[in-house]
Image (cartoon, rainbow over the protein chains, first blue to last red):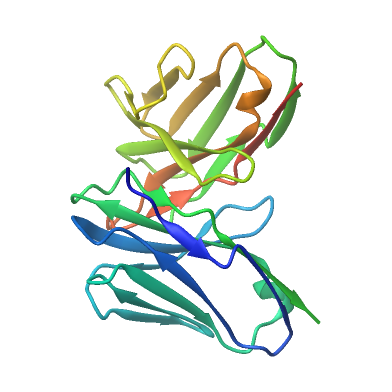
Length: 113
Length: 114
């Protein structure tokens, strides 16, 4: 059974703090790692998709890294803002399949003004 | 990116009844997916719906419980049949991006079964 783990489960930070979350996934037969941002009552928003070991992606104040050999990815948020409050999900594909995303349970971030 | 809408956005249903959830995409797509998230759990794939063929169900999900229709390339429905409180979840549909490297999701249907 493929299992994607995320930590921490929840995080409370002050506006301006930088923060990071971890996603751990099985490294065998790995195909791609995805990060999503999910606000309540909205669609999960695709942030990054990474496939190669050492990949680094950046979108504004948010960045992510990938280590496929040891099976982990980090998501960083620099200078957190209240609008960053959301649940951050990571998910993996395996075996070349684009369909079956295996999700972690997410990290719920709350940023206080 | 694709724009995806779902109806209803939320519902409260009685045990033993069925609910059909609709998913509409603003462009033609080959593959559509249905997921659910039970409280405190991960998003889990229920089935893949391709136009013109039977849906493919993941382990633990069966057609009698979650029948799916895919009448054209922009629309799909998922029915949750003979509901029980364990079916209380968020149900989401998704499609592959144009580059087929990620999935775009609808806003979800929040279902509560009493």
